[in-house]
Image (cartoon, rainbow, N blue to C red; front, side, top):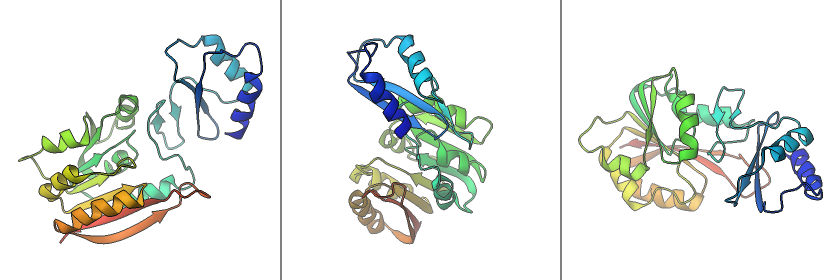
Length: 240
């Protein structure tokens, strides 16, 4: 990452640098580097990306393919700490098994594909267009299928349908919110695994879920971003 940033800083001083660029996103898995130009409505010339590829080893166009065979598209969500991601996956999926599992806020399918090894069917729900192509690719050849929908809309549509054995939720920092937690409680899945990146919204949502009949089974903390205040939590709730 630092090598890529250093190269871009040097390039910015060159007359060839496109002056309309205001923001750049760098995404890497250590061996590959993805450069995305943000905040512009102008097409970026191919020669700029060819220049990046010349200056920065490992630059790729399109998606990154992780060693774990995960495809990650530009602007999609993925747990990027390559040292902990396998442990995080094990913590969420564990030795759980059953007929049906839901992965809500699925991103590119990190948890969904892991669950597909032990569940007859996995439904991965994601609303971000940037993630859907990679999600579909990552679920190929598994018992999982992707659904393009907001989590709230998906839950509203599930009244009277088959109850999952497990629900995994990995919401953004804003958490689940009152209506989502209420709908989850009404579904009454035996187990919910909540992956959170914000302790405050996690506490709020747990208060609602526990009040609706769930009990804490385990809490695991993962330091995905060392030397920062960010902390990932994995909470297992079981229907009491």
